[in-house]
Image (cartoon, rainbow, N blue to C red; front, side, top):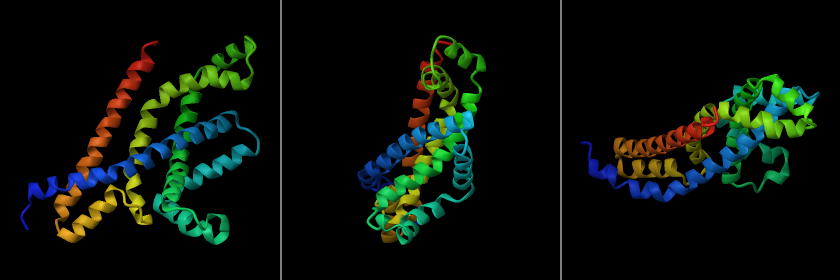
Length: 221
């Protein structure tokens, strides 16, 4: 078969209809992974007893095993051990898997950013009567997040691309639609090139957001 631009262009309306699900998975998972990453980073930053070892094991497991395996463990494995997960939807399993997996990377990135904040900042906060929680929320985390923004956005980009694994759990995201269209039309090159361009466009958008955030957060410096 010859490559047909028309065949590729005709796929975009189909992909855009499924784009909402991909974006929903990405945004929810990114939000949860950042929050969980901050929590883990703070625990590891202060080396909280017991929790430090538990979070270390968590980070090691989710960074050291393939995401696809983790998704299968959550969606197919958990219901066998915990009956409460029997009715868990593929969407929930995907969001949970992506959130846990990428929170491990977020945690290490944010922990490194927090460590870059001068210890004198903590002491200054304590000296004006702040407790540890107030110092972290008002002083350390805002400065650390500014340093971590490029890495956080990079991890979010990886999360967006990894959301394509949602089709393995049966979700009709843009990757699943691409698979179906390619199988029915045998236009594999056109189909996969179309979905590649969609992901590429989304990544470019995230990169623009990253640059805007960096400029805004660096104004004071």
